[in-house]
Image (cartoon, rainbow, N blue to C red):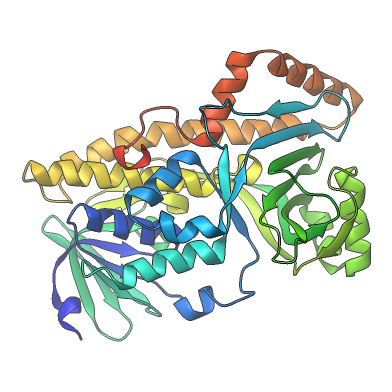
Length: 408
């Protein structure tokens, strides 16, 4: 057991993924110490080819990265999203979101591997973070006096507030008896990288089909100028096995058919992975000396690319209430501190979750009549600048009561 393991720290963060590690770094900027405990091996998580997924980082989330000091190292890997084009099955009635000259981008695309590397490198340099990787938690202890995580090797890491950042299947949330509303969409997201004939011009495409959205997200060109995008294709659970087993040529033909020529011919497809899609939302996000962040608290459909950004808003809000509480002499696990976090994030995350669920259902209604109604609605939004601005502000994450760390 190291000296750091023996210290009672402000936070015991269970889960060292993108959300958990961002919290540890944000908290450290405010002088708060943490134990970060994760099952995974960081070397595997950052290995070439481990994860072909890419993530859209909203404007607000990028401000958070700037404020915790990791943006500079990430800048070279960013691909700006300068516009979003939305269509119903590539039929007439397209909806375009293009920000004004003073609004900046609608977000930035990053390979997940690069986000992990930036966070892990920063965490390794931060003395206020005791990062314990490849660790199994066998017992979670919470009382009015403090918290502790007991590991399989017998170590006991103590703190004042436990934070669950373990993802959708959070054992800490379940052990705390927090009720959760959830349903399965019976869909899977098939994800891979594509190379294509025409440049994407930094436009993200969201093409809706009855089975679900077909999203083409801009990525940086290769060094030789090859044009690249990331594909997130939602298919029904019954079709998923067949789609993932298709040979490259057949898969490429299916993708090309759905793209409707927006990026020219598809030249190659990368390794494919698929992920089940579901919705879940907890009845509350706090308990005695416990806070939930990210997917431990809420899981949404990737239709609007807001999953990680929602978790990063949790990070900003929790860090702010902890720092303000500390200035008043309050313990991180104080019920008043947790009450503020619950009130701040509970409603906002629920509204985003409801909106994405509603969109999923709206665009999933089959038939020509439903498609015609959707396209009429899209045409109305296209002609209404105020509505378009509202949707763009939501996409950029700059609406609502924003934590200080998510502001420029």
